[in-house]
Length: 182
Image 1: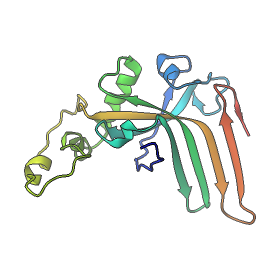
Image 2: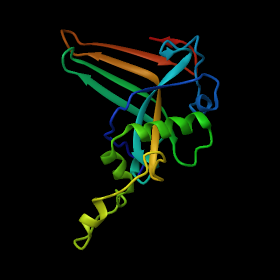
Image 3: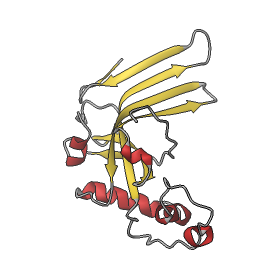
């Protein structure tokens, strides 16, 4: 519908992607390792999430923003950038390995969700919940068809310090691979 939408996802960690690799090229404006302060061994860090390819998240914009709030320090961080969606159609070996590795790392209960009925379809009163949701078997070695890995490479970080008066905001931007600037 063209309207913004909030989606809840579980942060699954960071993944480094080599600058100049095919993976990095899929994220518009990939930065070089020398210019990217958020890197490990010369690779830009991407946030990892997972989703079902049948979910509405997949149909929406490839631009995304994550918001974290830390209660102890009363700080809010908003990280925005472009998503790379890694599905079973992926050809690049490094991304395929990341997807398979993520699949293997999640629990059996989490894997089972990807073979459940379509999450976007309303279930009628005659639906067989026991048959559809219990005893769903998956292969730990081979990701389910509906399993997708989402990678977000931050290109903007907005930090809001809510503690104290006045509140303080700092914004960093990474403009197409140049160094982070305030």
